[in-house]
Every structure is written in structure tokens, then in C-alpha cells.
Length: 374
Image (cartoon, rainbow, N blue to C red; front, top):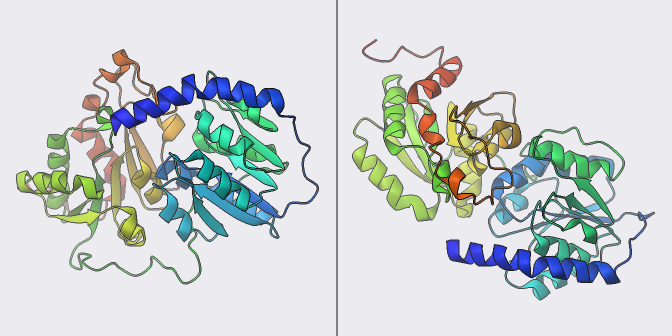
């Protein structure tokens, strides 16, 4: 997968930039449409980014009640899009078949197309070929992709991604004010407990893994954290994708003091995942989509940030806490694609201690017994 990702980014830059200039040479800017019947939104890069964009989708629906909202996703966030009440139609765009992706875009005939992608020239080229009457996207420093949009907002590395998304919305006229939230389609509910939920004790959810190793926390520290919550009378549930089941089982085998339940966090049972998160006493996660999902559900969340910065990618919600590494140079990730070798070697996550996380969790545990042995 890493080789495929590297090849895509290589081609996206060294083939994509010349193509952007070529298409820009033959393309003229379009005026803002007088009548808006369909608004398309492209967000295909990740689950967390789509969660952050849910407030934007809600504001689009509120300001253009008669317009149809079409969400164009990738494979990783398609199922979440299917659950959202603010979306009228969800279309998954194939990442390796550009002509099929263009056909799918043109079939929806968007009057306005908003591209939430931050760096990919591929997404900008899709937007230009979509047949949309008006396109909006980011002018991201160093990415040379903004020439293909009718209007572009500066993407800043100094503000949270939510504020960057709101900058795009302002190009349409009204402001966006809604926070990320998971508003489900009619007939769907997360109020009931999923099968297997512990009935005798509340539980804490841990999310341990992401593909980028520099964002992962020590397994030994997760085990100590699990033992601490067990001593407070809490069960521990581990979330993870199908590919991480073996890692979860190994963790449970070695973690003698943990009472954990394996939860498959794949998109096949995303609704059940939402239910598990919604009923959790606390969610502790490295910076990823699960962290943002829990925050949008207004569950107490602690986000662990090493290479990422809470200023850029922290959880957003009424009950969220970010633990930022104090190691010099931490928080260097902006778009998530940075490959600076010196930064990759920084032990950012190692500077986060178990004691720091326990201290951050204490405000959510005040009604529980003190840890055993204290």
C-alpha cells in the first residue's frame, strides 16, 4: 500500500501539475450560477475529514433547502456518507479510474461543486472535468492546484481544518457556523446498545492504530492505561479495522490486567461502531477518524497528538481534551503527506506519558471509585 501511495503522489505531482497548467490554459472562469438545483461536495480522502465537514454539509442544507446535496466520497468514507441525513445522494469515486470518476460526476450535473481536497491535483482535475457550472476549491501553498477553480480559498496551516472548510463556504456568500455532528437518516438510531455491550460496568474505548507508525503510541503504555481503568471498574474496548484484528488479539493476550472486547471498526458495521462510541464513558484515541467521530457524537474524548497538532487536527466538541507531545518539533503534520525524514524520526509520541493521559481523563471519572491500591 505504501508503494501504491508513493506512486500516486509522485504521478499526482509530476504529471498532475503539467496537466493542471494545460487544462487551465484552455479553461475560462465561470460566473456564479443564478439558479442552484444541485450542490456537489468532493471529500474522498479520509473518515476524519468527512466528520469535520459534517457541519458544512448541515449549513449547505439549511441555506439551500431546495437544492439536492450530492456527496462524492472515496472508499474509506462512503458508508459514513450513506448514513448522513444532510446528504441526498452519495457517490463513491474510483481513485484509479479517472474517466469513470468523471462520468459519475457529470451524471449528477452539479450547479456548484465544492472540492474539500487540500493537495491532490487529481481531485482538482476531476472538478474541472465534472461539467459543474461553478467550482470551488483550495489554494494550498506549494500544491499548484487552484488554477482550475472558478473561486479558491487560501488553505492555511495555522488554523483548524474546520476553519479552512468554512473559508470555502464563505465563497458561496453565507457563513458556516455548525460544528461537526452525526445527524443520521430517518429510521437510523444509535440510542440502543449494540449486542455484546457490557451491562454490569461502563467502558472506555481505545483506538491504538493508524497506518503511519509515527502517530502510534507505545503498546506498553496502552496496557498500563487499560490496567488503570480496570482498577476504576471500567471495561476497555479496542477499536480497529479488519486488518488490525491480529494486533488486537496479540494485545489482549499480553495485557493480563485488561478486560477488553474486540470491536471491528470497519465500514461494514459503521452504525454499530457509532453505537459503541455513543455509549462509551470515554474515548481515548490517537489522531484519526474514530477520534473525530466520537467528538462529533459529543462523547468525552481525549486525543493523543504527537506529529499532529490539536490546532490543526484536534477533536471538536463540548467534551474534548487534547494531549499534545512536548517533544521539540511535534505537531509538524499539516496535510498528512509530509515525508521529511528528520521529522519522521522524532519520538513525538514517546513524550506523552501514561500519567498525562490519566490526568486528562480524571474530570470524566470523578464519580468512580479511586484506583485500587491508592
